[in-house]
Image 1: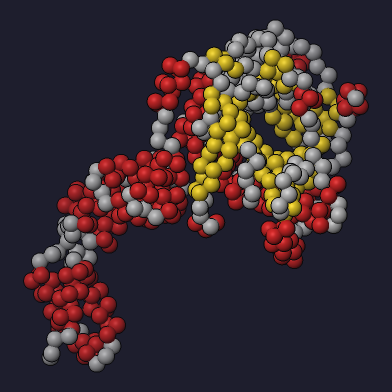
Image 2 (image 1 turned 90 degrees about the vertical axis):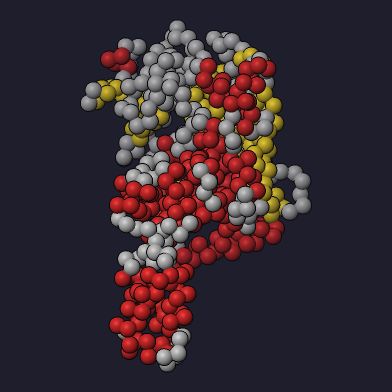
Amino acid sequence: MASTLFRTIQTHSFMLYPTTLLRRSNGVFYCTMKSTHSQTATQEKQQIRVTPQNQQNKAKTLDKIAKDYEAIIGIETHVQLSTLTKAFCGCPYNYGSQPNTSICPICMGLPGALPVLNSKVIESAVKLGLALNCKLSLNSKFDRKQYFYPDLPKGYQISQFDIPIATGGYLDVDLPIEFGGGHRRFGITRVHMEEDAGKLLHSEDGDYSQVDLNRAGVPLLEIVSEPDMRTGVEAAEYAAELQRLVRYLGVSNGNMQEGSLRCDVNVSIRPVGQLEFGTKVEIKNLNSFSSINRAIDFEIARQALLYSQGQGDQIVQETRLWEEGAQKTITMRKKEGLSDYRYFPEPDLPEVILSAEYINSISSSLPELPEMKRQRYEKMGLSMQDVLFLANDMNVAQFFDATIAKGADVKLAANWIMGDIAAYMKNEKLSINEIKLSSEELAELIASIKSSTISGKIGKEILFELMAKGGTVKRIIEERDLVQIVDPSEIEKMVNKVLSENPKQLEQYRGGKTKLQGFFAGQVMKISKGKANPGLLNKILIEKLNAKS
């Protein structure tokens, strides 16, 4: 078996010395592997064309499946922890750094190198376990998960097998309005600690691969869900909620594009009413929430088509890759069973023992979590659309909370943040922490508009200046003399002036062209430089326009 495997991979010979173990290129060490595989998944993708007719057929197939079959979906999520150093050594990890620049004998799996557990990994695991409503194991341990892969230098991965640190929890999810809305609760089977493997850097022609061990030993938490999801939308929203959760907790940045949050989806289908599960297929290479949704929809359709054609036996337990360009899953490898990994307790690490005091101290330090925040916002009277938007980003939620803490009207604060502020951030590609508007000044701006000190139009102009340049609302109002005109006699003088200067339009209005009211209002605003109170202006204007000549 081993000789057969190695005949498919040609490796550069090396000895256990740094100068010969790794190939140097531009001052950076690389370990290089040459492959003789004839076709890669990327090459297969280039041969596939998706036509509108295929898309229509897919939609029709999915409609039929919804009636005849039920999908059973579970997700295994790997969360990369934001610790300063790796799980079992002192090497830092920075995404995007030059290959093999953050490695040591422990990362490289050299003989005699002993791991030392990073205590922050345990802290993060306990935080996540509590946030997922899990039961924590007061005594857990690490195990060796043994398998061969070029980016796994030790030949095994340090993980947890039969006694994970957390089990039996759940995650509450609120589905977006556009997907039908509603509340779902998905079970969590387990959360366990483990280390990451290295990374293979494939050449453009697929002729060889280089091994980067920077990521080897980076701490991970794996969250295994119960098979409670039934649609691609539910699975994507579950993954999005996990991302929100780890960001709120501060244990990970959750960036899928960096590999900080990776999801492997397990999908099977069964005829509606059948209790027995179908054959499970795992899908990898899912780098966005939308790809999770689309990959699941495709896999459900593929399996249902085989069942309907009497070819259910062709659905085998395997790992498949999602090809984004072709919008389909393709076979990667047959799925290994647990026995293939030959788990046994890690002899170089002691048990992980948690005390009640330690757990209580972490529990008391947990922030308000996304579900709690959504419930609080709902009680404020906000719509579910407002709630989901504000609670989606922890920094946006903190900005909103700080704004209303200064006395701002809840609905007005939500409208400003979701409207002009969100549009500005999107156009400028900035986060809410990067704009120069403070929550105090937004509250002051809302108060100034509500008290009629300034108009809504002027308020919007001030808002954009505050976001771009900073400053205070009061200073801008004083420097530009933007205080709203609320004296009826002063506004009446302006209205009389406009009417006297536009006799023709006045005659047309009184002749039935009432839409000209907007013209007169605009002229008054022009004279007042936008400072006339709109409500008072319209009241006086209508009285003058409808007065008998």
